[in-house]
Amino acid sequence: MLSLSALRGRRPLLRRLPPTGAGLTAALLWTFAQGPVARPAETVTPPPRPVSVPASDHKGQPPGLRALFGSENRVMRTRERVIAVTFNAAWNDAGVNSVLGELARRRTPATFFLTGDFAGRHPAVVRRIAVAGHGLGNHSFSHPRFKDLTETGRRHEVVATDRALRAAGAGRALTPFFRFPYSETSPAHIKEVNALGFAAVEFTTDTNGWKGTEGGMTVDRAVGRAVDALRPGAVLQMHVGASQGRTEVIDAQALPRILDALTARGYRVIDLRTLLTA
Image 1 (cartoon, rainbow, N blue to C red):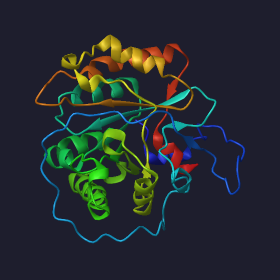
Image 2 (image 1 turned 90 degrees about the vertical axis):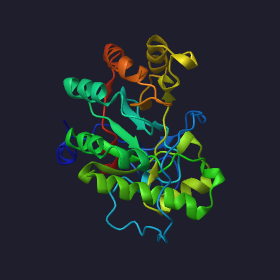
Image 3 (image 1 turned 180 degrees about the horizontal axis):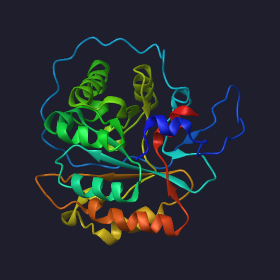
C-alpha cells in the first residue's frame, strides 16, 4: 500500500493547472458537483461533554490544505482519468473485511471517513485501516444534522471525533479531511470546519448501496451509479457497514465490479492525500 512518505516522493499525480482568479496559486482546485444525500438515522453513543476548543492557527499544515478551504470539494479539477475512492462508517463494520481485502488485493488506496462513535466502538477497525495504508477522515461524532446544532456543538462534533480517532490508533493515517453528516454543507459551516484546521471533502456521487435491498438497491444499481459518475477527478462515496442491524453490505459486494469497470474505462484510483502535497 502507498504510505505518506511514498506519496511525497512520487511525481505529482495530477497535472498543474493555470491560475483562474486573483490570488489563486494552488496547483489543484476543487469544485461542486451535487447536492446532499439523505441518510437514515442511527442510534449512537452521545459524544463527551463539550469543551472549549480554540480555532486552528494553521501552523504546520500541509502545503495543499489551504487550497481546499472555502469549498465543499466534490470534484478534483483535473483532465486526467483519475478518481478517489472513499468509504463512510457510522453503523456496523459488516463489510470491513471484504472491502479491505479487495483493496489490498488490488493495491488500491482509499480514504475512510469514520464517526467518532464508530471509532470508539471499533478501535481495531481504525487500526486495521491505518496499518493497511489508507487515509482516515473525520465524519463527526454522532452524525447529527449540523444545522440543528449550535456553533459550539458543531465544533465539538469535529474535535471529539479527532480525539476518538487518535485514541483508537489512527496515527499517521489521520487526515485533515472532514465530511459533513448527510453531506449537508453551508458556507458558514465550512468556514467553521476550516477554522479548526479541516478541509471539507464531500463526493461527486454516492453509490446508494447504503439503502440496501429494503431501499430498492442492488449490486447492479450500485455499480451503475458509480460508472455513470465517472469523470476526471470524481470522488466516489460508499459505505462499509449497514444500518439498523443489517449485515448485507451492497457496496462491499459491488466494489470489485466497480474497480474493474473504472480500469476498463482507463481510470486509476489515487490517494486523496496527494492533494495535501500540491
